[in-house]
Length: 148
Image 1 (cartoon, rainbow, N blue to C red):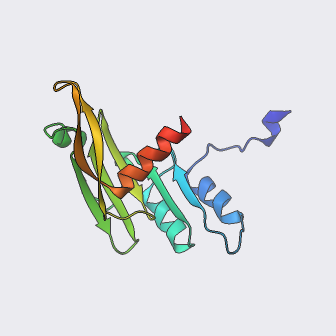
Image 2 (image 1 turned 90 degrees about the horizontal axis):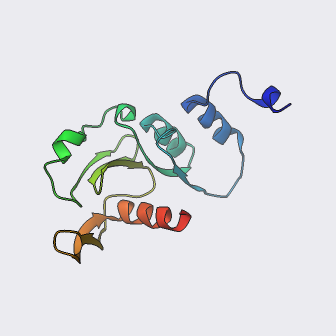
């Protein structure tokens, strides 16, 4: 019976951390990409202390010390706008980015530099136009496109 093997409590930050911590792969570095259901600043800090690198979309209520703008503040900006925050104590970076919707991404792997040029299609102008984005956003977008 499959139900016997399910944990009695829902999957949380602690259970994901424990699962990752229990896996021992000496000498191998994994690059984890995490969904916003799991991502938190505590998880990325803990993984960083263990030498593991991770990137993930993050919900607004899971960024502890970070003062990124909210959805309302970002709505006044044009598509492609971003703001970032660096936590040097945990070696993490968080980016709020306005694309078709509002996205927050956090990473202990990718930094803010270098900025890279990407192209976006403008419905109003009916053409592609270049814009600058963090390497963090470019890498995450590329991985999302590959996984679809």
